[in-house]
Image 1 (cartoon, rainbow, N blue to C red):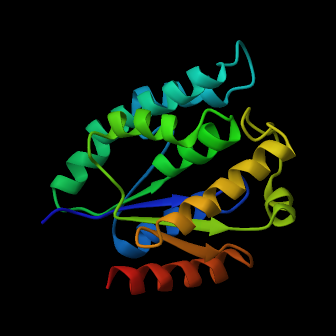
Image 2 (image 1 turned 45 degrees about the vertical axis):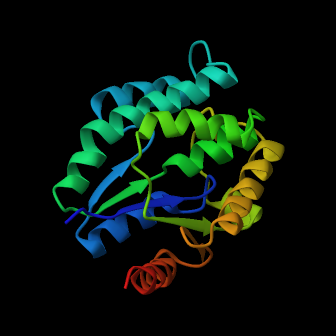
Length: 199
């Protein structure tokens, strides 16, 4: 039996990485992340998020994200699913649609087409959006910020709005969870909502 692919999405500071790891542990699922998850993907991640050197232009950013995702699906996600394992990924296609499609202004449809080519039919069974307000998100970001985290308030507002639009347009696939509160509170809320949806 094929495993289930669950993507955890959210803006910077939403807590998605922590909650994706918690969810994977609770489900006994494979945990992975994007961009990254493979040796090549981690190298691409450094190109995308690093603050040194020549930053990719917006289209190059979208294509690099897709390249990392193609490798991730081929080497990690698809084999795990085929082996009957559930997979929880910290970011998936929704991130590209929100960040590059809306945030960078490349167009959601154009980025969706690139992403579809990259994943070769491997869609998420469930996409969990951790939704937090801008003030909460900002308060959780500390230390040195990566290149995308530094993109500015207007960019991140477009990303947050795009996420909400994506979730509203596909309620069968997307599940919106309030990301405010302590880590344990959010974990209980998210895991209960996912268990109900997957039952």
